[in-house]
Image (cartoon, rainbow, N blue to C red; front, side, top):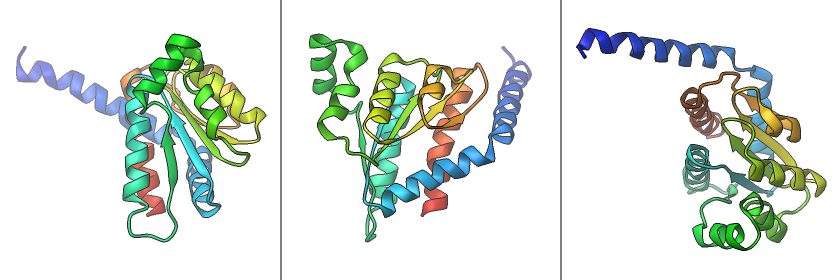
Amino acid sequence: MSEDALLEPIENYLASLRQQIADLDRNELTTFVGLLRDAREGGRQIFIMGNGGSAATASHFVCDFNKGLSFGRDGKYKIICLNDNVPTLMAYANDVGYDAVFVEQLKNFLRAGDLVIGISGSGNSANVVKAVEYANAKGAVTLALAGYDGGALKRAARHCVHVNIADMQIVEDIHMILDHMAMRVLG
């Protein structure tokens, strides 16, 4: 494949990414950043989770907020990634079921008013949806980062940033951009 043949799909991808950034609902973005700010100011915990690439994004959020937005500051984030403890995940998956890996951890730690963030590119990760539904029932604030049509996660969460495209890579790119955008705004 020639260099010129590579350029067209590169340009198409970048154009799609630019369009999705332009199409993001600004009210959803301000709510998203406001919820993160409010959790820190209120001393509340934040729980975040996802599967696959969304799990990596959730882990990245934790690093950026616990270190990048907390180190050397009086007001610190208390953010925990529910997909980072592999032995706990495997124990619940084996003994209870994969749909329970996040909700069972929330049962140990969640308090009313805490912020629970579920990330799902498709919006249909059953274990994330189940955890968000539990969090709602316990008086937590829930936020979805979802793609495609938003799926069950968009319907379950009280708040959502929806990336309305059926392209997993673009959705995951935008979710990572949300992390870095929030860091910039809240820093």
